[in-house]
Length: 171
Image (cartoon, rainbow, N blue to C red; front, side, top):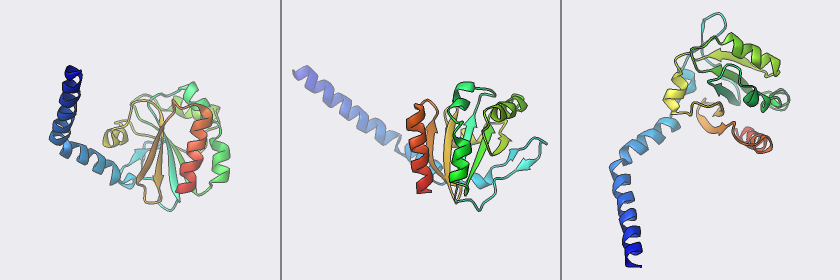
């Protein structure tokens, strides 16, 4: 019993010490996400031209992916066409974040009828700046292009769409 109590105290003390030691790093990480401005990044379009996302929308829903043809992920997004009809003031953008030929990505989006602008982030700058997972995910940005939420596509379809509508209504 005393060994168990000593172990719990040791773990608690270790957590406090480590947390204190990395407090500035943790705060910097969270602050970086809070004050991230999407408008400062440029992506490329099909012609290779630099594109900045236009301001003026109530919000932005970005499908950010590192796979140029992930059918499982894209199948979860087939309802985006209906989403754009309901929330026509929220921009929908798909961005491929790797150096691969993104024309395959664009074709896969058309095959699944995913609406919106298609862009390329070959250096994965958005992923690096926001410390995002390598796996496909949806990113919500508010009208000021500040990050509101990150939704992984590993969530089951019904829960994913429930969250999407919740965030869209809050934008």
